[in-house]
Image 1 (spheres, rainbow, N blue to C red):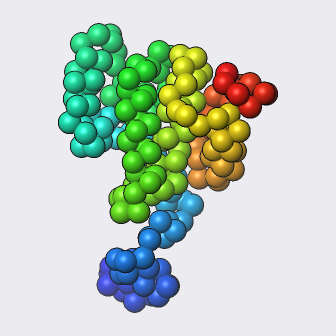
Image 2 (cartoon, rainbow, N blue to C red; image 1 turned 60 degrees about the vertical axis):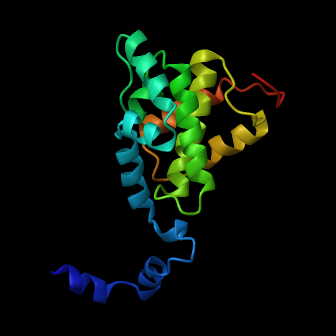
Length: 174
């Protein structure tokens, strides 16, 4: 079936949202598409995404590559690294936060949210460092949101389950 035939057979409300550049198009993705986008982003090179946001990050990337024996090169590598560089986690968090807060981001809000909370949780669980001003109830709310998404893969779910253990029950700092 030709691509043009798919366009004519598509739900017109989806096409309308895609064509309307003034409308926030964050809700156009289906769960299975979000899963694919998350997998893609976890396999995306850190150097490309992080340096396109702010030039100073190249200095951090250079330092990590000079001092870490096997530096993480992708988002997934960073989040699953046994000793991820804290500076890279901070850059990943800032990258995700910028995309979460931008209505014009090409990265879906949902994916940016997963990256944002993953960065925070990995810093807490692997470094015992807080890289956010969010309090524990807010972080817990983010964790619960991620764990309730059907499109989040098992490895990412495990990461969030590991991270939640680092939050104290008092709602304060770990």
